[in-house]
Length: 258
Image (cartoon, rainbow, N blue to C red; front, side, top):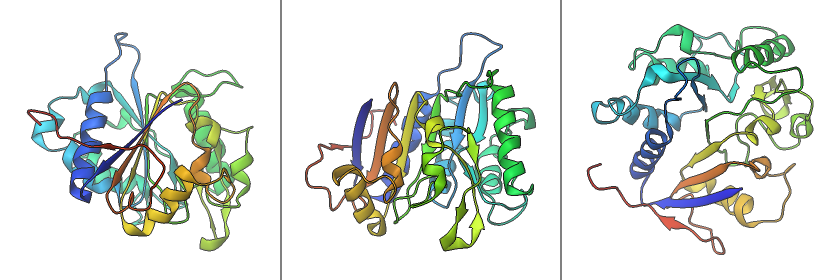
C-alpha cells in the first residue's frame, strides 16, 4: 500500500487540495464501453469539495460523462430526506454537473435495511460485471472520518468490521439507535485510490490514534482501510493534524495555474 499524508493550512485550502486530487485522478477509460467509478462519501464535509468541483475552472477539466457515481454508505432514509447522503450529492454535485440518471447508482435507503444492503450488492455486481465471489475495484473512493474514528458507516464495535462475506452490510449502530448501510472493509480495500478528507480540531485525536496509535480497528475503524494494491492519501487541515508527532507529512502546495 502506498500512503501519503498531506496537511493543508485551513479547511478552505483542504477542499482545494481535495478537488485537485480528484480532478487529477479521473482518467477516462480508453474503452468506451467502460467507465471511471467514483464512490462518494456522506456527511457535511464533502459539500465544500463538491462546490469546487462544479466551479467552471475545474468542471471543464473532466469528462464527467465517463464517470459512474456510487456511495460508500447511506442512512436508512428516502432519497429526498434531509439526512440522505444521496440528496446532498445530488444538490451540490450531480445536478450542477448535469449528470445523467444512468450514471448514478445510489443506495436505496428507503428499503428495509437488510433488503437495501442485498439490493445494492446486486447493483454493484451488475454494474461491475462481477461473479458471485468477486469484489468491485473502484477507481477512486472518497472518505471522511468522525471524531470516534468511524469512516463510511463502519462504527466502533459493530459486526460489519469483521464482515468478509458481503459487499454491502446494514449494521445496527447503537449510538444512533438505527441501522446504517455501508460497503464492507474488503470493498474499500480493493480500491485503486482512496482519499480521506478530514478537518477540525474535534478530529485531531482520532487522526492521531488512527495514524500513530496501536492497531485497534474495533476501536478505531478507519484503521481497517488499508488497500493492499492501491494508493491512499490523507488530506488533513492543520487542526485535524495538530496532534501528529511521529508521522511524516507533506505540506500541500498549490500547483502553478491552479
